[in-house]
Length: 201
Image (cartoon, rainbow, N blue to C red; front, side, top):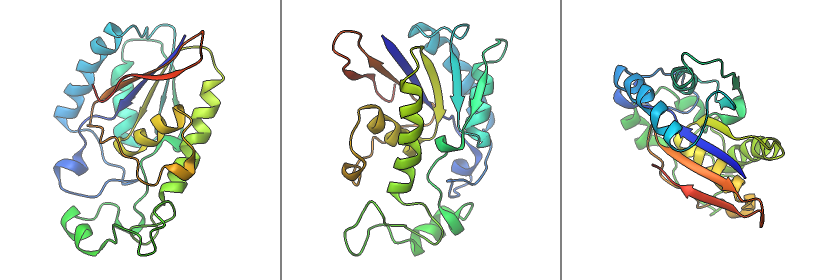
């Protein structure tokens, strides 16, 4: 059985400061660092052994710091991958959320949700889905368990890709995962079903 422990990064400064995240490279808050240190035991209790697996992480600071705290005191390697980044919000990254909310275009005027960009320079859902789908396909050929640290909205596309949902069907999908959440994804040996064993735990 193959298992993936999917972690969303812990509380970050941009959220506390009321700023748009995306690729804005915010760091963990003090509470976020404490939250990350508390995740280690929960992950072990779920049967993931830091001594025998790899940890993949978004290269943005808040995710990287979460991964580093999780693996502190171990020899577990961390592999940083840009494909695990949150959706980019282009010119609005780091902007005050209140200002962003006033000027963004949240819904496509032509109902093309997959290719809609809510502000200048932002990624579309299709952009995010394609890069994350590529990453998931690569690690699914490996037989070992893995821990993956990413971002809340990006994790939605990770889970969808894990379950082989076609990108054309990802226009409305959103799991609403919280900072510092754990989701466990499993592939059984017999039927090869891809099961969400834990969501947003």
